[in-house]
Length: 184
Image 1 (cartoon, rainbow, N blue to C red):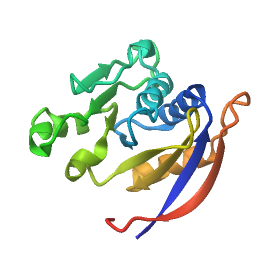
Image 2: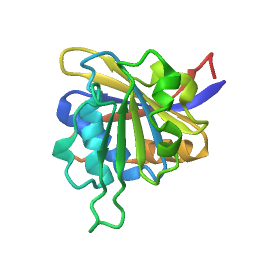
Image 3: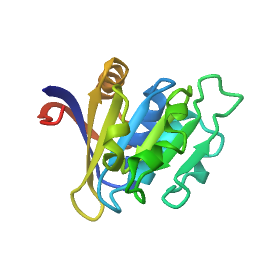
């Protein structure tokens, strides 16, 4: 099955944060974002930007939840558009059922953004509607991010992301491509 995708090139951590900020601002309540990529690819930097865009109280608190599995960044109560971010990390799990027992289904019912790093490790837990962001390391600083939407909500987010322009000081390029997903 062919899906539409958006590919963005980020040449620095600041550009990765800007991309995350754009996603966080555009994502609606209840959006699930699956993140994958090698160690050091910038997944947590992307989540930091996502938290900024979502309007959390303190985005400087964003860090990798590898050892605690879940970090919750509350929405700023004075910002009516703000969304809580539920940041999970499946890096240390080898048992999707045990990961699910942490309250995965309950998180999916929240009105915040659910962001899962190392998502491929618990693929069978992904809901039908999600945005999959995959990081590819180009060099020491550059990353190519591919975003593939599954489901109506995520397709709307992907279209908004494709149409969004990066801040003028952040030269992020975007292009639409079709990618083949043999497992979908």
